[in-house]
Length: 216
Image 1 (cartoon, helix red, strand yellow):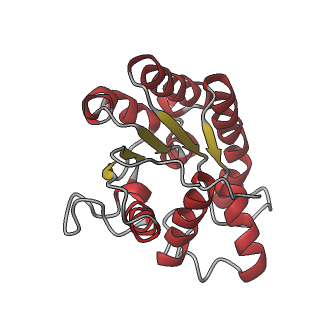
Image 2 (tube, one colour):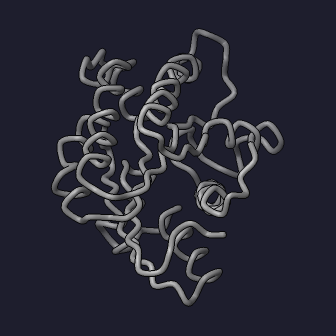
């Protein structure tokens, strides 16, 4: 049974993976998983009038999403919020040593956003952990360092989900299963931004989660 009921408002929050040109040539939902998920929901439940809102902004870190949280998310008064953020934090922490993107600050930003939503809205929340489509564990390349660092950020998503009783979509684990079977080529040209097939994986697994059918 699909958990998003008739008349509800579903808001996607995140970075470029969520944005997916929704602010340029493909408003209002972009061309990525947000649009695909909305299409799945409408196709399966045409009688349900669900409003979908995309508030992804390309390049955002968790701190930047937190800074616009009240205007872009709380003000919309959504019934559902999905949050996918963190890969830019990891990149900036590793490449520049940006302290506002450290694991501790990432946890603070997540806790603030989810805590404010819990305090001010009667809404359901889905946290999606940041993912990286690589299998490099060499220890000396940048990609392998991202893979190592990602573990701590993902733990913070899990702890935030437990603290605030949110739903959780383990995207990194899901993608690792797929690239372990087919390699990365069908899903991305680089480890951060998915091809359409990658976006379909996100949308399909989010849909299955909200159908109560997800097994990972």
